[in-house]
Amino acid sequence: MPFFQLTSEFSCLDMIRNCTIATVGDVGISLIAFWVVAVVSKSRQWFRQPRWWQVSNFILVGVVITIIFEALATGVLDRWEYAATMPILPFFGTGLLPLLQWILIPPIIVWLVKRQISNLK
Image (cartoon, rainbow, N blue to C red; front, top):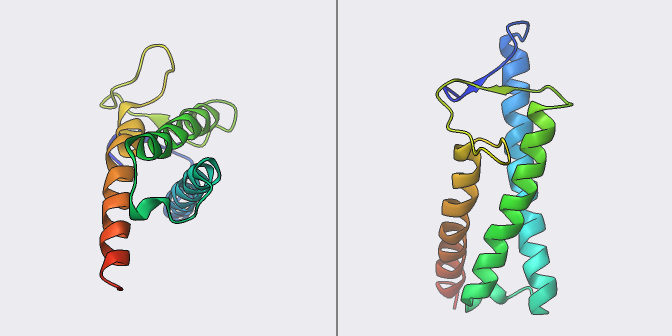
């Protein structure tokens, strides 16, 4: 949260609501990215033996959606602004931390899911 700046008019409840919506949105992005890779792979089981291109596409879908949503949230929807501490990508105007989230977390998700599924055998 120190990298984001919410309107001073927001109450504590407004902040909780925004953070909850952002979290639900992140889950939705993960599901969309999973299904895009599943459709391209023609298998919902792609994460059992993920190939580099599947993980790359999983990451890419998340990054593209994040760039779009961050532009909307900090633009026309005016949900939040980036604080001065947020590094911002010059061309896109997107905060670096939301993008890093979608570069670092998806491979961890794939690894954890693969590990959990393999323990079920």
